[in-house]
Length: 325
Image (tube, rainbow, N blue to C red; front, side):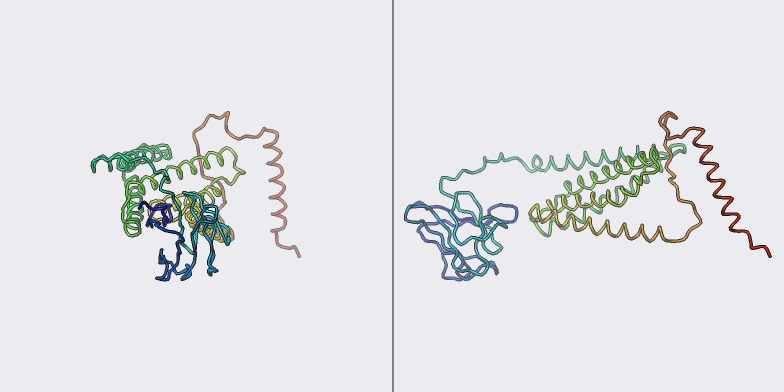
């Protein structure tokens, strides 16, 4: 006798982790051994749910006065009764279920390949990321220095950065191996390389903005908020390869890390700004650019500003004189 349908248990990424064939209605679902479908979920009641057709043949899931109820979608609203549509997920406790008819369509069959062919795309991505980040770091060292270019020193600095990237990707790969059983080293390495290149782009853009418009705190914004946003995206991407967390949970994790980084940066900057120092604060960013693009003022404005500064200095000098008897 062919099954009447299937009830599937889905994992956090929506993949089928367990499939139960239905031969007769009704089907009761819960933690108790008296149910036809038993779930190992502490948030599911002993007898949580009943699935059966009504008098018109329409299939419904009905809550059996459970503690945590029936939800019409993963994380959706709580309902006492839910019409089941083939392929549509619903939730009880922390378990996501899905009913499928025997005629439910499936994904196309994947083409089988040998081990090298399956690994090649990810390692090609890692190798391409490695070459690209080396080129970008060497060029960044070349354009960032006013001294004669030293290839050995540039490669030494590049290798230091690469060692950090290798270590960072290795730590995430070990986490992936522990949590989901696969390393995904090339993917984690490519993410880290991409983050480095985006950070260089942020800093370069901020330096040019602050050079052309000194009144804009572009470097401060890039160092505090830019690094926070970049770290949030990096954590979000790494968790996609190192865990089975849903996108919303990964987003909140990334935003939490970002908030912590931004908070620490703002506190550190506030403490530094309120520390007494005799050194003048000014931007030390120098760019080779045509004089027509440089921020400048007219000669009259320069003289007027100089006279204003002179008067302020004279006033300060008068205040600094000791009182005459």
